Image (cartoon, rainbow, N blue to C red; front, top):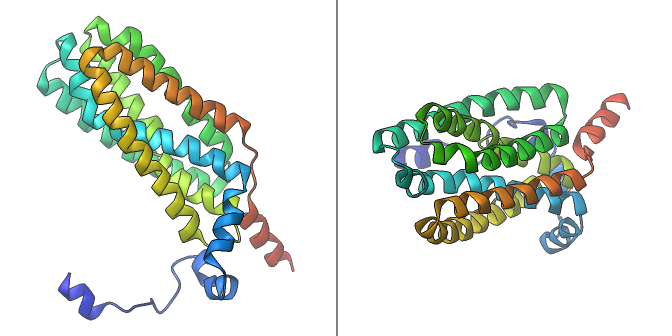
Length: 236
């Protein structure tokens, strides 16, 4: 850390992205409170906050609650640990693939809807799969859970910038992450209490939350403001 502090510049010589290239031009003298007020009035962004916060919280809570939910059904500690690792590994791989796909296609809303719907279906099916005490089925379910929840982070951050342009990206992403962290805390604490009494009730509650995320994504409209602005600038 001391090395970084002594050797790194406050600002890089070249901007790391198109967004950062013109950041001074777009945001010089911008009012933080005015931009925040405008952002909170953007319906599609607020719906994204709901979907993002829930999937982010579900991804976080899975790691904490895997043992309380699975152990009562005689799943071994070794299986739960391996299942958690596979969930993360396949989630990271899915994040890379989703990132490349979104960069080429710009189909943010379609991807979000697919993720929220598949997450809902995954947790709904877990109400039957987990009590079967079948390692293969449950392990496959954990892998699918990682694939459909982990990529919400890169998707949400990029999509929020598109929806809120020309508002500062750091403001939009900061608000998005704040909502997600609060939801993660609330969900983890509440689900822990529920899982102690009834693991299936916890899975059912997860399903309900994911259903809310799916409904929110279906109510959204895709506004690629940054992409359209960049395209217009290129044409002109």
